[in-house]
View (cartoon, rainbow, N blue to C red):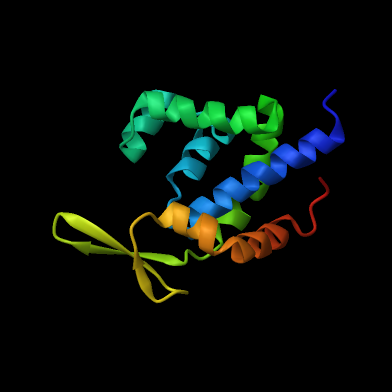
Length: 140
């Protein structure tokens, strides 16, 4: 049996990761984890679906499982929180300009070069608030 405190810590760390990704406009990792762990899709099917390599799919799933410690916990976390995280609105807009993309933070009203780092360093308060909102009402 996995100690409850470790489950909570790993679960919160994983949710924080997914929320930060979602706020920065990246939902691929959450979708990959959901398709593999919950839907039972193969890495080959997932890689074709999202245009990522099978190695990337495997690495994402491995990171998710390693973060919480056990595959069944990862499956429960992803299944339980998927819709709640998908309901979080991103704060980074992607502006496509021909062959390149520009990222724009809605809250800062400025262009950013690395959306994930920007959200992680400049908007920790929003990540914390979203984390509390996502886990509200679920016993960890």
